[in-house]
Length: 151
Image (tube, rainbow, N blue to C red; front, side):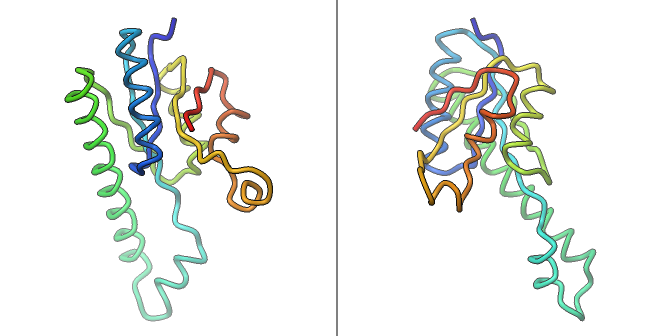
């Protein structure tokens, strides 16, 4: 059925529910697994606040990118360790930097030739969803492969 599953995580408790579900499914199907985390580009407004008039902009950007990469590495290391320890799966970690999360997830699935995306959703509705957006909804709207959303 599914041969290569992309599991998206940000390291949160909610995302770990989707991670565990995706890993269990991959084990049952004997599917390859890529675990992805996406770090967004630093907004120009946040950058302007941080850099200020006297700080070197390049240094601030380098610091941001280093911290984002370190955070992504920690998330992926934990996920890969969980995959191996609890499910006996050797998962490929993937950090997609400087992209909107939904876009990064869809791009990663396409680039890695995945045939299923597994991710979690908060299940927000109404005004809350409109204000906060929904990465899962965006992935559903733009993915060319099936998406399994775990609440």
